Length: 207
Image 1 (cartoon, rainbow, N blue to C red):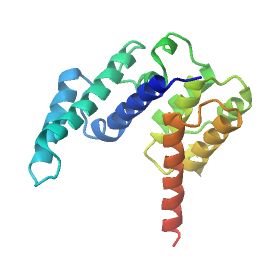
Image 2: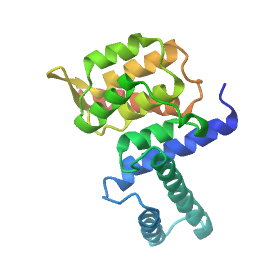
Image 3: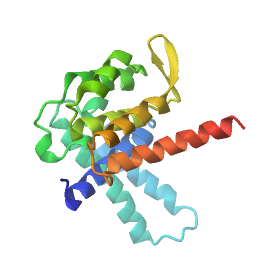
Image 4: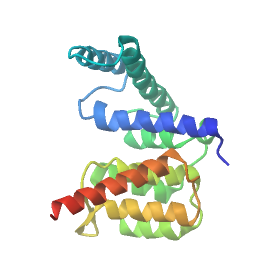
């Protein structure tokens, strides 16, 4: 059973991962402590320019929190190897501190690598994962995170294009069916929100 403190820790790790994939990497920011701080200092300066209803001290606290989340996650990823490796970042974010020294199933690592680096959803690996019965919480979070942070709508799968949301939906289904994560696990909650958003976007595009 995951404690409330552990859920808060995972939430912070997830937010750090989101910042890296959605803010820092698109901007080409190197994942070093000073570069991360400089990026958020510049964002803070830009946020101060317009008239804002947020007090300066609260604005500074918010930006410092984001910078710290990223730096802490980068430090955790470095304990697994190269912090610029997206898989190390996902694995670090998906793990509680005591879980980082444990190995991850090879089929999960390979699936996540192909999805993140090649936009390829390996159908054979996916079938093995869904039928495994041995997926642990860290691996469940990794699969959800990898499926959430591929910034495309479609991925390759055995020579054809399939919607990314179908991959995400299958892993959400696996997590729920086998109760791999608590219902309030931040990775599961975020994955469900991401799937709803993708469903909504698809519906709007068909109108």
